[in-house]
Image (cartoon, rainbow, N blue to C red; front, side, top):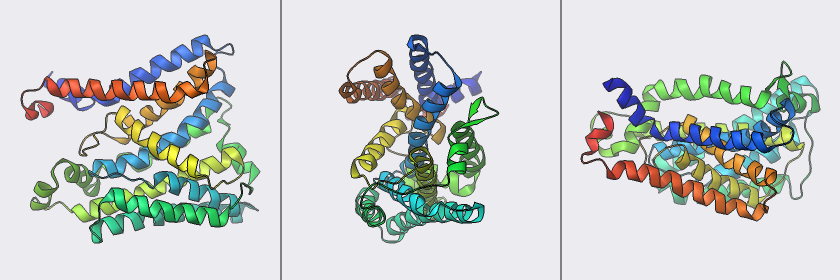
Length: 326
């Protein structure tokens, strides 16, 4: 019983985001004339997975006690790169995909190296590097254009066995093969330790520098995956500061809604995924109830405030911080 209580306390934010998403999505499907069909699920998944991947990327630096303001710009940059090189035959397309993933990973590595070895504040570092990545995107795509391998794009934005959206399968694969193994490694646990109490973690022999470097590097990789998916959805690339800024801010909101502490050391990528789905479902609810799209920031703010308030209320009821862990 004590183990169950401990699990519930540690995963409070995750459970809240799951329940909130299920409620909102049920309301959406219940009031949508077409109901829950494969095309509806496919469209919702393709939109939601983009933000979910960027939110996963944001989660990693946040767990270490930092904040990455460049995730949106890496997302945009890799979208522009993909629109230029993920073309041609199977071999050329495969090499293009690898190059895009490498570019995003390298961008994250640069962020991490400056934060760790340059000893600069993450928020300042990533604000500066984000501007550089946006400049690279503009250099590649001064105007929206480009192309992508249509067969690959159709597959990645379609369905598996004509039922399950491929985007959801991709997201599940990344969670199982990337996030879960990373969280169980020494480096992954070091990210949590660095965010919880960096000084104590260092004195305990935790590799703080390696953990932070890995967090930012993996964040860049996830942004690159999201950039590829955006290219598959739009069949083009666009160096849009508005898109980059919106995804950056929404990724932070998704992280908070998903139960990850902005102070670091608590939370996880799965909660951020459901936080992203919550934010995306707001747009669908506005559509189905024929409400003005300009109301979307209002509802996002209300849900974000609700999530933060519920988390704060739980902390206020605790007399000793050790109660959070036992």
